[in-house]
Length: 536
Ligand code: AHR
Image (cartoon, rainbow, N blue to C red; front, side):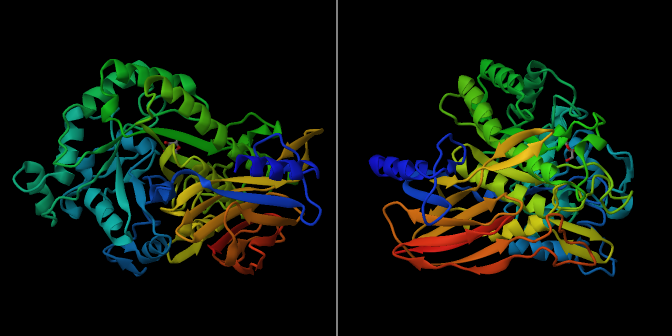
C-alpha cells in the first residue's frame, strides 16, 4: 500500500503539482491535479459536534436574531424565530454554546429564570441593557426545538463556585431539590441533562485576566464534586487562543498537579481569522480590513490566515501531550471564524455583525476540512457566531432573514457528520500571489474525505481566484461507481447574500462522471465543492 502511494506521489512529482501541506511537487499529463483518498488510513470519527454553533448576548444575536418574543408578528415558536429553527434543523445542528463569550463571565443565570415579567434588566458586558427575556429555560427550549444539544458557559470571574453547582442542579437534578423545584415552577419538571459545561471563557482576558496557575486553581475548585446525577459531565476548561502555547502548558500542568486532569473533557481553543497582514494600519478595528471590499491579495491572505488553524491545532495538541500523554482531553474549538473591521454589518444595534462573502464560504470549507483532518483531536467546534455576528450562518433584522454563504457550506458538508475521516493526498499547482511586493504561495487545492459504508464524501476548496482545476480523483483500493456533487462559487469574489439578494451565492448541483473506477472533475475557480461518491 505504502509503495503504491509512493509511486503515485512520484508520478505527481514528475509534473509540477504541489501536494497541499507538503513540499512534494507534482502534476499529470491529463489532469492538472490529483486527489488520492486513502480509506485504509482512518483518522477518526468526525464527531457531529464539530459542526457546532455559538450564540452570545451581543448586539443582535439573541434579541432579534434568535429571540423575537412570543407576541411578535414574526413567525416564532414561543418567542424563538422560526426561520432560525428551520435553518438549524436542515443542517442537523448538533450543539449550541450559550450565553457567551465574554458575556458569560458577567452573567448571573438567576437573572434569566422565573416569570418573564419579573426578570431584572442588567448591564450587559457589551454595554447595553439586557432584558433577560432569554434565559436558561428559553435557551434549553431553543435547543430542544432545533435538535441541538446545549453547551452552557459558566461564569467563573464574577460568581462563586456555588452558583455553578446550583446552575447544574437547576438544569440536571431530578425532583426533590431546590433547583428542581425552581425549574418545575417555570414549567419544566424533568431534568434537562445538560452535558457540556464550559468553566469560564477566555480566562486569560475578559474572563478574569488570570495567570494559568490562578485559573487552574479556580477551575479545580469549580469542578470538584459538582453533582453529576449519574452521567459524566463534559467539563471544558478555558483554553488558549491561537499559538498561545504557554497557557496550555502551564494550565494543564497545574491541573495535573491537583490530579484533576481526569475530570476534564476538553480544552477550549479560540482562533479568529483576522486579515492583519496587509500592513496598512495597526488600529485594532481598521486593521482587520473590510468584509466585502477587498483586493486579490486580501482574498488569499485571509484564506492563508484561516489555514493557520491547522498548525495551531497540531502545536496545541503536542503541548497537551506533555501533561496528558494519552490524550484523554480533546480540543474544543468553541470560537472560530472571520472577524472584519466594522462597516459592513446590519447597523449600530447589531454589534460585531458583518457581511459574509464567497471568501468566507471558502474559509468555512477549509476550516471544516481541517477539523476533519484532525478528527482524532477535535471533539467540538463552534462557529462564532451563528447569527448577526462575525462568522454568521444567518442574518436577521426584524422581519428580514437571509442565509449566508457560510450556511450553505455547513449544509453541503452534512454527510461528513458522524462518518470516518480518512487521510487524503491533494496534489495541485500552488497559487502564487503578490503580497506587499513579494510573491507568496498558497496551496492549489485542499480538502478532506470521510467514509460511511459505501458512501464517500470528498470536500474540496479551490482558492484560485480565476483558475479552474481539472483533477483526477482516485480511491486507493476501491473504485468509484457513481457520484453526485454540489458546488458553491460565483464569478464575483465579493458576492454575498443580503436581504435584497438572498440567493446571490447558492450551491448548484454539479455532474460527476465516474469512469474506470475514478473521477475526473473540474473544480471551478474560487469554489467549495462537495462530491458524494458511491464506492463499488
Ligand atoms: O465572539 C466575540 C467575542 O470574541 C467573544 O465574546 C469572546 O470570547 C471573544 O473574544
